[in-house]
Length: 178
Image 1 (cartoon, rainbow, N blue to C red):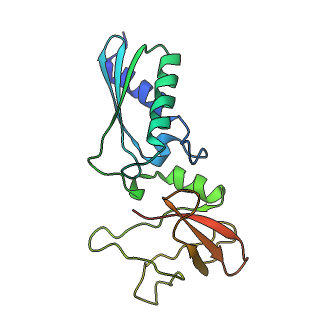
Image 2: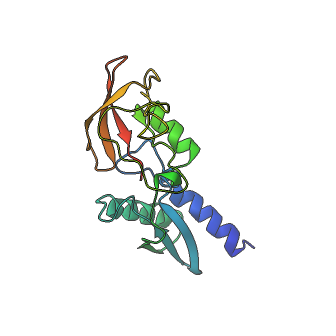
Image 3: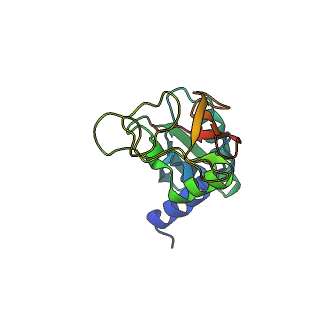
């Protein structure tokens, strides 16, 4: 007999394997938006999902994709509930997700300080030695240079900024820190 915990883990693996509709290189698990899967009864499952930001237009597509995948695996009644607390943070992106972003040509978010104000970036990335500014520079996902500049605070989605590398001159998206 399969225990509820083992079943929840398997269903979470299935739901977590769903690709993000805006960044299909990442799964929902790697993006860190899948919070929990709860077996409510013999044929009923509730999934908790946190959007990357309030009003994220992709949350509906995520929910529909999760419902489809779980139904295809024998769960007839799937409810996906949006959970706003705790709020999603770029810290929730897994190491594998960060690696995939970099390989896909998107600079992953930098690691935020564990306390204190979140540094704002208003132009060219600063090096750790040139305060004020983020301690960790935005590195080019193509050549690794930390000499990059901000072209636009918004890119193809609200959670990404458009940057350009000053070394190789390639433009790239940067997943903004949150």
